[in-house]
Image (cartoon, rainbow, N blue to C red; front, side):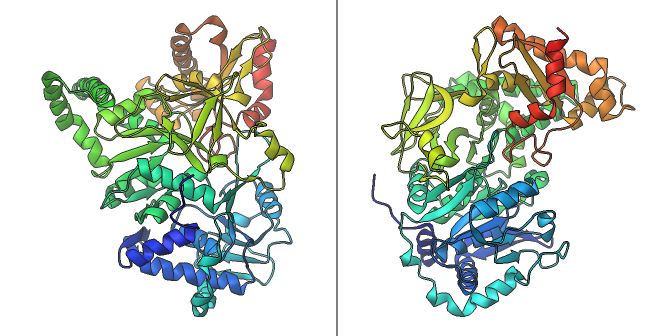
Length: 593
């Protein structure tokens, strides 16, 4: 392992702050206006919050939790906790109150930062929580038991006079930076212990591939409670790159046009939704639709030449310039006009989506990582990539494929283990120290990795056939009308599927077929909608062997979301919860055969 440039994440930040005192570190919106905060000012607030934590009794090694949407205060408090020698424990907004209580108690957190008091409704705070700090001073909804409830500004005021007592140099690379609880798709949350060394190695390796450039701005909308979202803080801190915060999922496109970022990390579903919206707008007239089809076709050809770093034939270049003027330049403008790289992670992205954006002049690189590996361990390169692949290992990461197809990893970024779970920790390592990812992959002759599915999601039918459902689900979800698909069939004679529809597309579909008076529930049950969904599934079935075909399906009228529990915060389907919720419907598809 190469020697670390910094001993800790706070050391990295304050080194950048000293070099870039007046340079912008944060871009955020407040009271309708975009504001900027310099490294100097962010650093001052971080030290004040760290001082306040010290006055509350936080010492090296203590745990402090954050429960908030993505915003400036998240970054400031995260860096402050670590600057005080503490360990940050992120908590997702919107998870069940019982899960919040479990994480707070299991992690031994002593202080909780929370964006709004209403997030603590029905949450039973464990005895180990000594103080609750609230971000929003104007938000007085709800009550917090105990006397130690104060607003963030008051905590900063408490710590302003002890800046000099914050000893960044006392933090060692082996100290815990964070404990990240996996939302996962099955089981009880497990606290992944990541040291400063784990994270610094990862972000240093990523920075050698996604090299920061002058004028870079990284856009943050992903939840910081997720390790992929947190990578934004690590990357910005390590490289001195400004962070621009989104106002939320609904305002991504509006915000991105305002702040004009150059780096856009996201999960596949955002790119898919953007593609669907672009395609839907193009279908508003026959002329626009033909222009879009022409542009998409030329863009795909252009992207293939770019992927292989081959010279582009003159006739393709001429056609591409026309497509660029008519379509692609407008798409880039929607994304702010300065995007140089989109990074997709958290789940597999359909190859045609990555190809479309790359063809449009917005290079989209798919990567791969886990909470247990401090985020990224593989990513495509800007000048060496393959559509459908999760890329090549980043520098310093070793990978191999086990006999059963499971991806195994050795890297300085691999976690210390699961907090208070020594047996669970030992289970995920081979005897010779390889971390078992639980993901089934294939590796080509150049070392590119192709994700095939989660090992625990592999369906074994009653005929003994092993089936990875994810590729089939992704293919079905290509259709704009279908929001999510969950396939089942373990120990059963055939596969069945539950389908969740996109409400916006469903209303457009209904209007185009004269069904606009019907409710969402009625439309989901209508024969017209059912026949359309069947035609989508039939098309997918056509190219698959008989044992991988879906024999029956049901449409679920409710939309699956992270808030209602069917999806993780990065929009992956929680199969075990969906099965539990719709068990009767699933089993009926077998009993009626």
